[in-house]
Length: 536
Image (cartoon, rainbow, N blue to C red; front, side, top):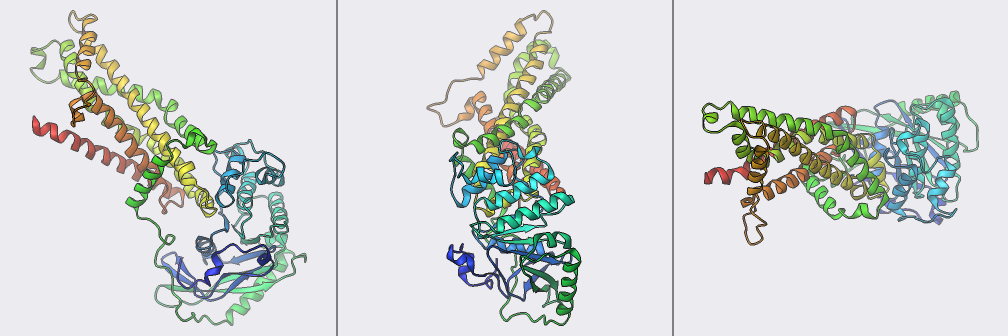
């Protein structure tokens, strides 16, 4: 995040022997973005393994932002974000398996020593239950279980008590105390506003973050005021408030000098964050590399199945009806052209022209409709995972969410787009056949003529030809595949943009996904038609 963090050894997971000694997780001069300003911390922070540390402070002072920034530069740590509770389409067991796979590798053992099964028992969770079916308290327990299952050096929890009732808060505090005392002895850092929750946690250290005077143009100085406690001592919420009042008095007398050489990070995102086009290409490459993954990976298979269910059966009637309506509009428009019906009966006209309309127009029109329907649906679904920081929580654990979650979502959306294109084309074909069979004396001959003219567009496989477009039917199939790939990668990429951090941001991402995918389809279709127009 910045060049003046701490010594290089801070980012490494400590050895078992090292876990008995305090760990420095923050040094003077650590900088990060805080809204429209940069913040620089002017205090060190060391925490003890096997103990709970609480971070408190006024709203907006930068507690959560500072923790997020620290976690980005500490491989081996875990983070529980405010709204995270596991990927909702996966089961409890799959969420835990995905979390443990990053740092410790996949664990497939079914005996009692399997950390996944052990976590299920410890946190009172049913491994076969889908995360989306859990209650609020259960989802919070799942998020904590996912963070602890890989035995990280430090677990950071951002307001884990938010939205929980009194009983759930007491249960969560008990689980965190138990986790800190386990053999792996993780250091647990909790960000909270609630003094009652702090008292239940029985922390060894309370740290109040105080925003000092501006440390320079566009900068804030943050001071960490500490109060050491006995981890076995019982305190009340009033005791915690008294401690905070004392820390406030000490902060008023403090010095806000910024260490020499301290500077803040100049970017909002994590160091090395890719630009938009680079992220798009990276997602496309990862998707290609994960094409066979659903065949042998249960998490990828469930993600693919969930995406397909959103993009196929639920939307099938829509594509058939809209395809048929589009065919009717095209035929009526064709029949209204002055002088055309003086040359042909309408059945002969439709049988002659509509096959060309089908192969030339259906892929692009269907792609635009799919971008606005199933594309927006999948983008919203993935965007919710991004906004709740569920993907970030797994990335911190080095879990391969890009290949095991995002890539299958892209593949599923592309498959749904191809399915929707076929249904759209079927609807158009049905309307064309109706018109082709209802002309003066046409009978069944109009439908036969339509089928003959459509088959005449198939010129065979151009095995020895460089120009695939010489076969309109094959070219239409290629267009459908290309448009499906473009819109699926575009939708998922927009939904996982670093800027997606709220419900409003999800809506913005969905809108961008639709616009970008539609523009891509129109531009590509124009480029495809241009050579034909030039020859004509």
